[in-house]
Length: 335
Image 1 (tube, rainbow, N blue to C red):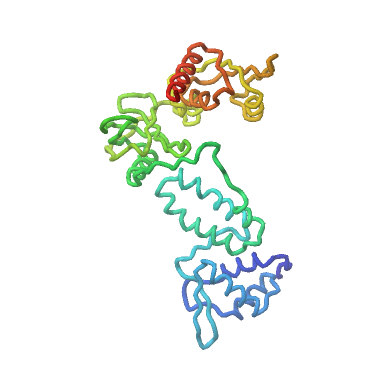
Image 2: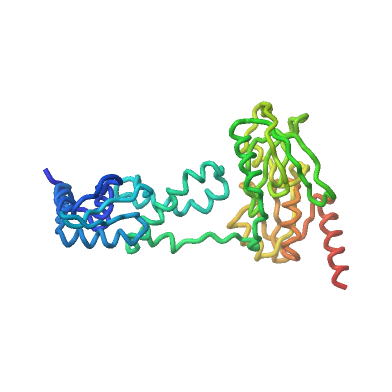
């Protein structure tokens, strides 16, 4: 028994696409019309002709040939159509995730995903008036920092590193640390990749160590597998590594930061807290006292300096003196 005609033009066109074979001579419009009617669509011969003409110009890889039986339609073998029926949410989700996946997915996986990206975008392009299709053009993510361009990473090196991480194999790399005069050879046990802003970092341990370290991917000039099994530190967790400050570029532990902040910065910190246990208390001079437990790291120092007069560190004294000396040195450069 035919289904109730509750489908819209989008679903009809999608079902029509799935009816087309990628082999043989193709199918005629009358046959396709009858098959659509069997699914519950109130389709006419002219409706199907219009649908096919629209779809053929939207990257779906359709081919039309003339025969004694009229025009025959088929899909080209290179076309990919395995999106769930009528599921625009899947197409939108994949299209929105494409930028992130290109940054974090293994090269080998990206090769598999390429047809999916094309398929999802084609699906959205074909139904531009659909509310899901319009959403991709109505949302954007803008980083709260300057738009730094990502450094170039050797794709061959990246591929070797990714394979070593997945296979837990040891690699030998030629690596130039920041400011190093020349590259040095290092044997690493790769553990994970982390994208920090525009820069990708390899989390690894040296062959004779168990302490994770960071290697900027763009500073790895060459990489080759050693053929040896990698040594993964017992109990290593990437989430724990990040939560404990592994990506904050500092050897210091947690400190009790006390500072005086302006009303403007206090409002910002009330909305975007440095910690769940952060405390902000108003002071008689119109400013606020900030107290928070935080890791003493390069990132903390960078943030404190970026706030200028909006924050004055009170404790720890060592951190206060460090910030004061850097600001004094900067002031001297402007004299």
